Image (tube, rainbow, N blue to C red; front, side, top):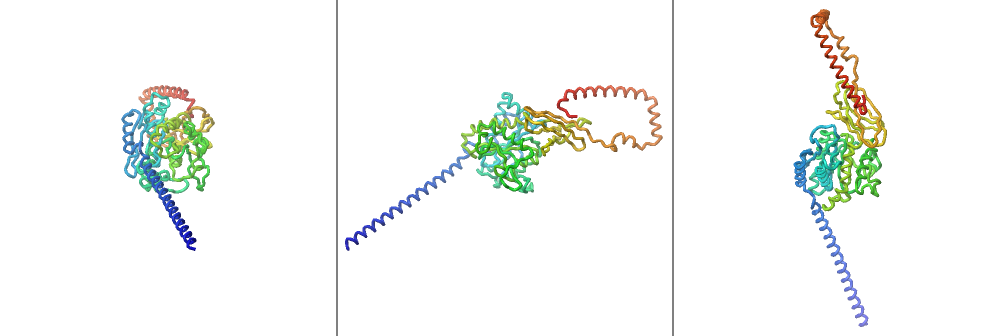
Length: 477
């Protein structure tokens, strides 16, 4: 019995020691895993801190913009469209052969850093500005852009979000959800919108942009409107200009190093609502309220890649960024609207049959720029209140078409000059005095005056006829 008891005691002791050893091992395992988790968290925190290394700070960006303005002052203008929540100026670079002047040229804008944690766009836009400055008059594409387009570049719409390393602005509002929405009243009170949003809206009231693009990160594709749907479901929902937007998006995608080879998005492009619906987005607002065709460009799979990768990302996106701007003058329909009465420009409207969208001509020059898909026949219509509308058919193939319209005023018989003459309430004595004056000593002078006036009218008529013959190819009268 004593031997058996001793055996059981020894067995129990061995089991206890084994359990203790197992528990210690388990505790050690937990400790190791906890240490690794802590190290991972520390590494992640360190990574967040290091994200901005090599990127321009807001102060660096402002300095780079102003230095660019001094270096390239013959083809650029620096201005601000407002300030962020924290008072950081929203600086814009305008690049043109006549910066700051009103011209009959289309205007294009690039906007970067809409989301604070997507800073690649602000870097690429500085690359773009410097490349245009260095290659103007050297590279044909650079020369085309500078001399035929007014390009406006806003490198950072959200400098506060960049400083905070987060998506939203200083009030933690997603600026790409802060615009008026066509489907749902996201924010109807303009005064309650974010200052960055209001700055963009006021900017587009001042400048009539033909097209634009915003640079984002986190994917690789060119996104086009609509961004939302009426039922909030993820479905393809195209604008009246869906073909044109697909054409623009394809220009960017196919000019990119590898965007068009995407396996997730055929051709590297997508309709916004088919990808995921958003409301209060900037590109939809541009098209509806500002007559501006805007794309949302996702230019990097990584939202915040290592700064050493930025030169490569620029090379991948360079031709895309240039070709998208150049497409404004390489295709489409462009022209002016005039009054046949006095030849003055008219701020009329251009529509295309079959497309439920109107483009407005400029106030000063009556100029318009209508982006359309090449290789198709279009019926273009010009209208202006108080004038008779006119239309013509065009074939849009490889190049742009210049098409001017001369509109005739709708004259009312009651308000005509002839009616006013006969409505004169002159008495008989006035008429007698007038006849005596005409047949008096001044008769010869009147004949001479009439002959001189007729000569100048004939000369003017010949010049107008010669000019109209030269412009017959592009003018609709």
